[in-house]
Length: 302
Image (cartoon, rainbow, N blue to C red; front, side, top):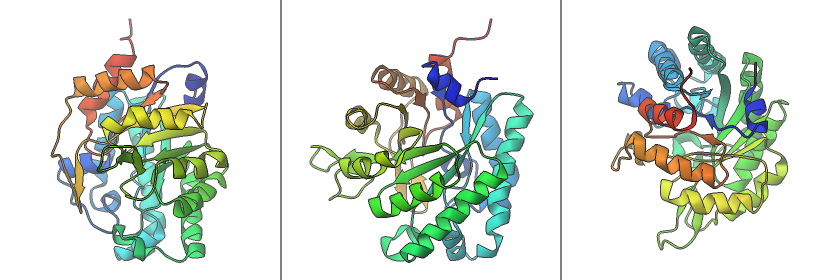
């Protein structure tokens, strides 16, 4: 059975799932400022599994665990720090159950982000405590059986480097997820939404650390072509793209813009033409968007 790495080595296009937190929200799961969708593993486990199943049914070949906001320091802010292990093991278990029920060869990526509590930079724990918390989550995801670690929405390079260090320590392949958008002036890209940080800065700091894949994720669709060019100047390995649709109004996602699934797939064809070999969606994308990607890149079985 071919692994995701085998598929990339054969220069095939791999389809990743779409937004998990926003799809949970669309299905009625409340979001929170501390752990965003992380608590859904305990409060709405059936819905978490249903979201994974929906993405697999749509054609996703990689699904990402609902652990984007489940470091211990985020869960402590949400008042459930003592449930850290149960929540994270539960998140992996729900993804595995969805995969096993499908009978398909689907890889499971363990999501880790370096977002601070309350999404406020002033709330980051001290550096040693932050690194220890990231290592703890990475090790737990690895022990729970994920196939790889997907670092997502990395931004400030110091905090992102700690996440990379923690993920690499597991020995699993690490997907580096970087985010960008156009400057308000429209000239050039900034990292995430940090006005004074050029997108080149995290690329120059993090790519040399040795990821297996570099993903442009949680980024404006309009910024993707320029972002691909910037990554390609620094990275010749596997490249993925899974951008967002809409904007964040804490703690909810505002779909103030929409991109039809067919249009999303058309954009993805352009990204593949520029060198991407993994395509999927982040916040605001749905199983319908992933189904359109599957139809665009995978011929129906005879």
